[in-house]
Length: 151
Image (cartoon, rainbow, N blue to C red; front, side, top):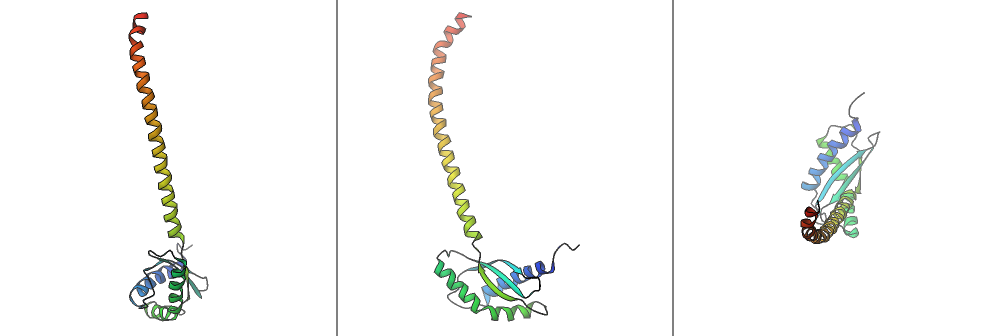
């Protein structure tokens, strides 16, 4: 059995080409910093779902506007891809916003926050325990002489 499916290879090549084309060839001023995070190609190579992220854009209205620009440029991008990649049929491009990066950043910040709270709590508990141990050590030293005398 083959290691990679043809659809995966076509998707990887489309991802590389689209990343370059969007960055260099699409001149629309409404388009922000777009990153092509992945391309999934249908089994019959008829459609390619292009997943994009937008650097610094979290406003839903701006995301919709960027996707609209990309959808309008899909025909141009498809024709440019056809010139660069030798395929009988270039898949129709469908653009989708990829929320996984934003979700990952949110989860990472939540984890960092939980770790810092845990460290602060442990430091406070260690401080209280150290305060109690100092008292115990002082008591133990005071009684320590007496215990040796009893043996």
